[in-house]
Image (cartoon, rainbow, N blue to C red; front, side, top):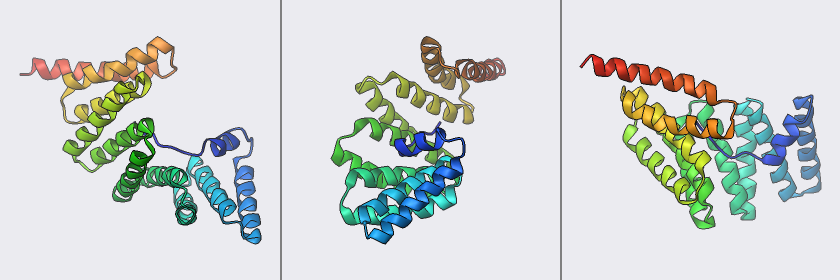
Length: 223
């Protein structure tokens, strides 16, 4: 269950538009205008918005092109917070394409910046995403380490929502290793939280959890 940072204003503009392609065209027009004016900050912003917009529409390859250009400009300007946002979006785009090594590189660079910024919440989010990437690579040891660090952060800052999400991620990993009983214990946390707040995904996750419990029962009875 991955979670990564995108441009909030960009997403709202895309989602609130009946024609998302029209929003993309507006980002492209802003980019042309910024370049014509020699406005490097505006150009970087337009590239970021365009990249985040393309990513939200599922066009990861074009998104990466725009985001990489935005990253160059942002580093020139020394905007560390925006650099981190771009790296997270880039990591997410690479992750969606299955380019795990590229995703790892982006997430690792963003973690270094987050440590300087003191943004623990986003650090926890990135660690969860890193865990997902390591699972994809078959490195359960590093995945577990990332998940544990992420869970520790969310528990310390009192974020029950994300703590439950990380528990689900850990549970999915364990279920993939046929450790169904341990997986079910962890996954229960998300179902309990979603039911408490009336989340629309509660029933779906409860159904998945029940399947894991059935496999745990089957495994124990066959021993």
